[in-house]
Image (cartoon, rainbow, N blue to C red; front, side, top):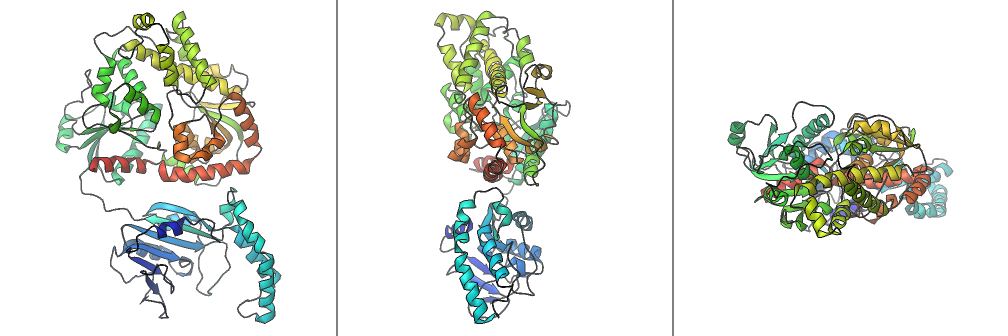
Length: 627
């Protein structure tokens, strides 16, 4: 009874002509497979040793290795031989016992966990890994042996074997009912057997993909320090994907070095850093040749901030109109530049950009947002003691909003309250949509006189104030103060002045800022229920804090987003909260159900490990560049 047939399905999906090796077997897994064993018996095509396979490099499209590695003296060597004999793109399909009695003695040496298999085949790209036989097969086996006095069934005689058969029939319901507990969070810890499927990476292309990578300045702390660390990880992932990467600090660009590199691509950790290098007309600096690759966060917000910085405008303030520029035309000259590739983790951003005709739809590609390695590493560790009931990690902007010149304008103050109230009433509706609809409902004369059209700079100043700051703050304060429990708040790095204001809310306790990579992963894992109320700039996208939290092994509740359903499927609805009342209900529900929390995290992390990595992101970039 297989708990998870994915490894069988992957084998079945291979074409009939696939060249395969059935390692350590006399009963070939497919008619065309070559069987190899250490003894010359019927059904064995090749007599050989897995420690030194008698085949040339790259001989097979797949190697099937079922219940063999526990019987070899050096499984690392055998694993290396399997990888060596695979063709680029070939599959290693491996199954090993875990909680199984010693057999084929004396040649039974090892047992492996899932992570043990990952270590053995660390040179492969993981395709699937899971429980092939679950605890429903462990209990009957142990009971059978126990109740027969641990008799040697092979030599036990008729009476012992008859008793064994009778017990086996009696225990059949335990095997049949195993499917009912498959989704329990500790199911995998008591597995009878595990499987692993890995793909040998395709041969690295010659240096056809040369990319300039614009990196943050070496100066500055806070978020800049975080981005410098993230950039290092991104550069390594880009290189592993087959690119030759030349990093250039945005404040020390050497045009000569860039020109000599003859780059095919030019990119940055996100669109904001690339914008920091542009001239006033949106042109790239001299020497930065190559196809622009824009990694979006919120592209409209990034462009709006860039406009504000050019006018030395404070974040969230309304500046004097700049009538010398049409923002939409300027934005189009950047994002819609010929050959530009725009990558977004938010389909709502793509809809907004195309509706304004800033970039063509064919230049935009959606991808699931990528987490960073420290979160994935934390998620692979044993679960820490969970000492925090409910927490929130992120920013609010109460201080900055109070200082803004827009706060004292009765017109803008009333309009902002209207937009925030509409967002609170409908958490699933993008803030951009609510913002646009509220402005469209204004009298034409009012819109024109105040510059509230996309072709005027005040529109974009106000967008940052409302969507980035006011909506984010009002949504988060509204939900967090109604969670029904004390909420420990970490972060507030973007507006430190708000830290003191958080404590004004009776149920919120500010616990300080956490280092993004050294401390935040552990805080996510140590919290029973993380509350992830998205930043207002996210339209329908995959919130980075949610993905980081789940990657670290933390459980979270989140406001609904279409792209989360796209990534995880309808099961994600279990952690959606559509109102403050629902948040309070689900906080209480999940605080009482640690097993269900672990079950949900385990299932969602499998998708994150497969899809939400920097390696996957840059594989997309290189593939598009090569195509």
